[in-house]
Each structure stands twice: as C-alpha cells, then as structure tokens.
Length: 483
Ligand SMILES: NC(=[NH2+])NCCC[C@H](N)C(=O)O
Image (cartoon, rainbow, N blue to C red; front, top):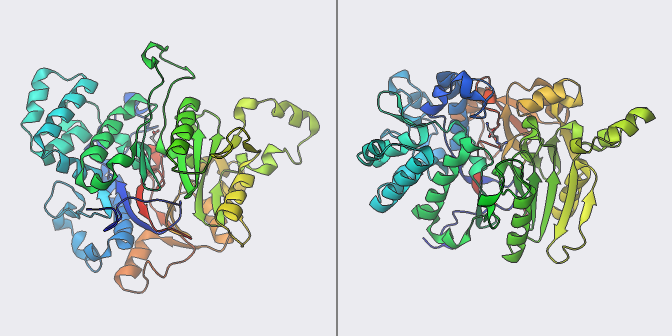
C-alpha cells in the first residue's frame, strides 16, 4: 500500500478529527496485579477486572467505533452486548472480534506479525531474555499459535491462569509506547522497568506489521548516549528515557516535549536535534515540570479540547506562579522552591541559539492557539476541579486534565471529576453520559458528525486506579488536519 493511496499514519494536531488509533483493552494481566507489586507496576491499587471491562472500557471501545468505524457497530449494540455472546466482540482471540483497522487493537497486530516464523523466534527470544525465562518455557512458547502467543506475551499468563512472567498492566496506556508526529513514528524509551516489554512489542509491531509498510523509514528511535552502560544505575542526568505522555503535536510545525518523572533532559535534547535534523517540525517547546508521581507526564496536567480551549491544572497558571494576592513573605519564600516550578523554553529550528521563554502554561497555550492555530476567538482555560482547592488536585489525580479529543470540541473524560465537569458546563459544553449517547446513536437521534462542544463521560471507578485517562489510553495514528 503506497502512502498516497491510503494514509495510515499522520497526526498534525491534538484535536483534528480522529480517524485511526492504537488501543489495548484490559487483558487478564490487569487482574493479576497483587497489592505488594501494585506500586512497582505503577498502579496505586488493585483493580476489579470484570467491572473495568464491562462497565467501563467497553464503553470506550463502543464510542470509538461509533466515531471511527461505525459500520461495524451501528444498530448492533443490543446483539453485541447480549449476555450469551460473552463479550466476544471485544476479545481479540475470538472469531467475532471487531477487527477494525481504525480502532486498532495491539494484541491483534501482534498476533498478525507472529505468523512469520522468523519474527516469532526473535520475539520469543527477546521476551524470554528480558524476563529471564527458562529454556523450557521458551520452548513451550514456540508451540503456541500466533493468537495464543500474542495473548501470553501480553498478559504473562499461559493457559489455566499460570503466570510465567509479570503482566504489563500499563499496556492499556498506548500513548506511552510511541507517538506519531506528522508522518513519523517516534518510539519511546520507558523510564520504568515495568514498561520495558511494552516498548519491545511496539518496536516489533512498527517495524514488521504490513500496516506500517510505507512508513518504515519514518520510524524514529532515540539512541542512548555513548557508553550509557557505564553510567550509575539511578539518577544520572545522561539517562535517555522518553514516554509518549510527554509529547504533543499541537501543530504540524510545533511539538511540545515534557521533561518529567519519565522523560529526561537528555532524551528531550536528542529529540530536538533529531527532529530538526530530519525536518519533521520547525519549533519544539520543552516544558519542564516537577518530577512527581502525580504529574508523571505533561498530559496529566493539560490537554487540548479545541483550537481555543484547553483543560489544565491551576497550579501552573499565571495567577499561582505570580502569587497574585499572596503576602510578600510567603511569595518570597515560595519563590525559592525551584523544583516545584514549571520551565518553558521554545526552540526554533532556524535559530536554536535564541530560544523564547514562557513563565507559565497559559501564556504558552494562548500563543499556540493564537499564533500557530490562527485562532480569532478568545482563548479559554477550563481548570481541574474548577480551580477550587482541594478538588483541583484530587481531580487531577484522577485524570481530569487527561482528555482525548475525538474531534475538535468533542472530548472523552472520566465521570468522577465532578467539579471539572461543572467547569466544562460553565464554559458552554454539553455534558453527556456515554451510555445515553450510545442510546441516542442507536436510535439515530444523534450522530458523531453533529456533535459539538461536548464532554462525553465514561464510568471510571476502576480505570482511574490505573493512573491514566483517555489521552493516555490512545495512540492516535491518523487525524484529519484542522486547517
Ligand atoms: N500518558 C500518560 N499520562 N500515561 C499514564 C500512565 C499510567 C501508568 N500507570 C504509569 O504510571 O505509567
């Protein structure tokens, strides 16, 4: 398939109509997280898998399918969800699986490439090396069919619920395995050991699946620094790690890269040089945020809703940073807490020696809306928890700022962030529960094309314990341009 015949990969904004994305629905590995490992596996709690699937994630799948691949779902919901069908529509190993090349399931792509014997051998060896498997286990894996093997490699569980290596419960957060920048795919280098196998699988899929045939030259890997293996294990500045939650394409020429708990300065540095050298973008803004678990990536503190609307955490707003209203002693003492500050530096390809600095997030985002996106309307900010303490931080923790735009102004978020929802309503958005919306779609009382300025709420009691929202649970491959 040549690139011209059918575009598979192209993302030039955060809000253009979504046409194709990579997802992974919660596999049985999530139901194997034990309390003593929850933190190592980057969960704060254990989750109830069936609730997470049936009452939460399945709605996400349905709404995505309605927007991206409606023929496979329209008018069929009653039948798809009938109890006797045992959710087979959602299970990649079943013949009734939805098999969409728009809402693309990673487990399905992985199974596809495992039909090739050479890839199968290589991948089994790599996974077994990373996970320290015995030779016998390695041989056992060789006997599996591609579909079975894909399931086992992802969940860590072989038939009869036997765990042979750890699960990768964060694989649902497909945002963090790679990022599409224009027609390029930048592969990630996870900061956390719990996510290493995800990066390995992503690499095999992008370099081998026929879907990406026309893009092989456009896959970008970030090299390690020379002699990285001689560096001390922790805390070295030269470490190169980067996760997709820290990368946002806000315009075809402008990329945002976070430096955070997960993405190092060295990685950001390499990305800037590589993308400028290959002419992928003209401008890159580095946003350095405090290294904290609750802010792990920049997409946990802000995301874009439409050209002129952003949702963000008030702690990074102008008002707070400038300490408006604070008494002078407090202001001066607070001013010294450098590590809590945000730093924003914008590099231009044609003149990297002279970067532009922004001292708060709103100024940067306003500049993007007005100057990159040529927006004439007033730029609006919706704040987490309606900017009221303690709801601001509570709701940010459950991903109030981590929304996924299906098209400009139509975003998906969690139903639990009440005050943020209130702020959306105040800003003129329609709020709709996903169940009601799907009913309306089925009854043909509404269509995805007609929706405007809407926040779609999805149940989230279990999903939110995994510490990511719908922005994290999506890796957009194709969006329509917004200009
Ligand atoms: N892009 C994101 N914000 N991803 C969230 C990932 C959450 C996951 N539990 C982790 O800690 O890695």
